Image 1 (cartoon, rainbow over the protein chains, first blue to last red):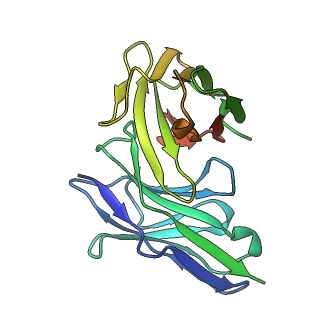
Image 2 (cartoon, each protein chain N blue to C red; image 1 turned 180 degrees about the vertical axis):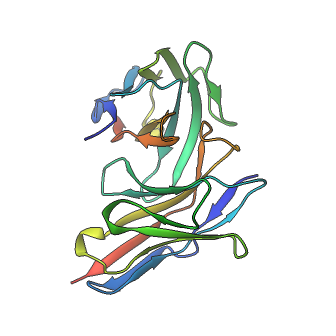
Amino acid sequence: AQSVAQPEDQVNVAEGNPLTVKCTYSVSGNPYLFWYVQYPNRGLQFLLKYITGDNLVKGSYGFEAEFNKSQTSFHLKKPSALVSDSALYFCAVTRGSSGNTPLVFGKGTRLSVIA
Amino acid sequence: GAVVSQHPSRVICKSGTSVKIECRSLDFQATTMFWYRQFPKKSLMLMATSNEGSKATYEQGVEKDKFLINHASLTLSTLTVTSAHPEDSSFYICSAWRASGNTIYFGEGSWLTVV
């Protein structure tokens, strides 16, 4: 079964420092991987996805993620964190081998950027 | 702007009554929509996959007679919580698959409180 794991419940980083939110995946076949962000009492906003192609994926708000097949990882990164980046981040993988299947989410990582 | 709209954003209902939540794709047709439930500070739990023109596919453990899903058009799916109980109180989020771009977009979520 497709799954993702986010090993950190909480990540704290100082404003202006680089940030990394970790995600590892377990899939059969080629993975469709996503990152979403959730602000308090809101729905999820799409940040970026990896389907195929370049391993480095650039997304919204300056975020990027690197697909690493050998390490089965898809970590989310940003070179310089902003206080406004503080939110709950979810890594997800499609349950099937196409985009038209449900997403399976990690447990989420709360990012706190401190001024 | 939002590409998936949910309504209402918040609703309070009395125990034993039914409440309907709407999910609309605003600028694309969605043959497939997904309904999730999120408990406070928890990840998203897939409830069902809603397919336009056919019956929804429910996840194991989700009562299909309690959580009625209707996907009557290519832009609208509805979730009706029937005979609501306080334990049904939760944050319900829908998502829709957009074929062009092969991306899943989420609504802003609906807070249901059953009193």
